[in-house]
Image (cartoon, rainbow, N blue to C red):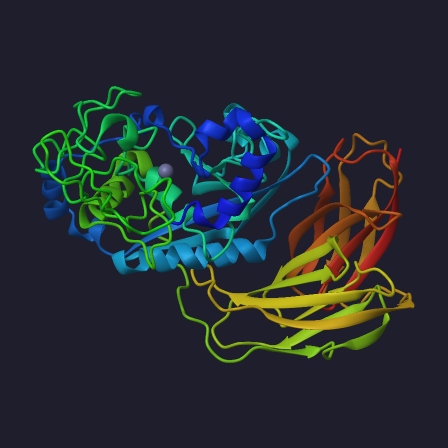
Length: 511
Ligand SMILES: [Zn+2]
């Protein structure tokens, strides 16, 4: 399983930096679901599955599963995984599960931003805290810097790719795994829906050098787990408890090859033949990874169980493949825009796309980064800095189709500031209370002759974004809560309403 292959170089660097302490115990990074955690997962017998399947065939047909991605930054709002990487990972996961009629879709837009340093850097030891942020009506996936128990310089930092918490019923995935090449998300979602590792019970690979080619014990020394036999006689009680996934003694973990013949014999003396290309295993560098028929049955059995009733099975997501060619019409490639705080990005839309993700990154400063989602084919951006080169990416997507590649262009901002006037569609735009005493909610009161998606951003005088939220503008008079009382420290800020039809800016004071 290439769950660790992408980061093997990093793991080597990490191992090197901690020197001899870890030298005798070098591991690549791995999934954080331990044997103890696996024992908390429900087990379904083959007989029960077949009976349920015959009585409820529709629960084994096409299934749509809502997902909420919690993108976690540190408490200063820094380090958050960008949405583009997540959409590409979701594409990968949907590709992995599509042959089995399972589609994952972005619930209500799909993203929730959290600023919390504890979750960001030590997701493994903040379970109670994490549960407070769960959506509760979706598969909750938190994308963090680190999925280990300890963060920072701790020896185990950076060795866990992700995990499913059976106690908290959420998934943590570190942000490095947000790439099309990583199978981590498909693997952790397998755990979420009750699947164990094929090597369940083995916390260390079977040690051929110490114990010889024939396994001399019937239980795993480290955990006491029953060792699964090649003849299938204990497949329902050992390993992953499934009979169509052969025994696995974790030998793929330290190998870089999609290869299962290590010359090892099980306690009966039968040659061990693991299945290297299982998504739930740890073998590396297989061209593709699969789920076995019994794994898919268990997965669907779990989805159909009362414990999963909170996952909406009535919403029909848009799985339509997006076709056609997207082209950015403004700015032109390498165009210099006279202004920096009023840049219109527009593109020729693509057939069948409901949403567009627009990402803008400063060439020389990755922290000078902006992302927007819109259903329009244009965006008016006021956040950029003067005299900088920016890269813009536009990616069309639907809630269950995120595989269309992003289209990019380069532009440069000028030195001029645009005199910002209220756009014509808005009237009576008032922010109150202003000044605020700090404990009051900041409210925007306005009348609009347009409806659509917009963003309310609050920036400090240096241009740093303090808060940004997506809002829905409707026709007529409306009130929008721009920030909750106590949320923003005292100071002077700019509040902006950003829309495809233009922006509104007001200075606000919080005492
Ligand atoms: Zn795992």
